[in-house]
Length: 174
Image 1 (cartoon, rainbow, N blue to C red):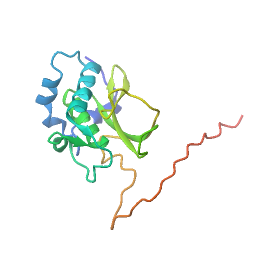
Image 2: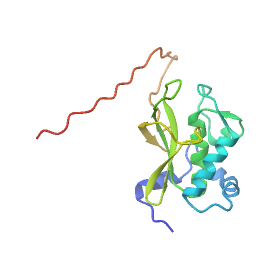
Image 3: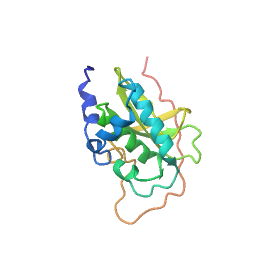
Image 4: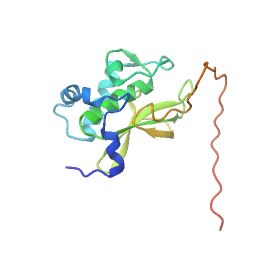
């Protein structure tokens, strides 16, 4: 049995878009024969890759893991929701990460998830068959409701251009 740090406990519970309590049977059947922990997570990521086609820009509405599970196409955020729900259903802490992925085409925010196994967080990205590219994490949360980069009220506004600069901060005074 693994003792989990207190800060990982919220990432075990069902959340708005990751209804892990609805995935217990599915998660158990997916990982039958896999070693507990990390191996189960890799099976889940592989299963999502096999069953869902990653279609950038197709996700106008945020949908839950239950809704994603009934589809054949999804955006990165929705694929992460499904992975998180399946991992949590197996009592593996899982959290949503939003940030940038080097060389993503077209360049946009990207979502993936992390699992807490063996005393550390591991990156899982069901949009890629092999983790590649540098990642810059911007926000962590239970699901997309926690990691919204902006929240808009009123009429929609079209974003025409975005520029991201990464600068090294000066070190402490000596």
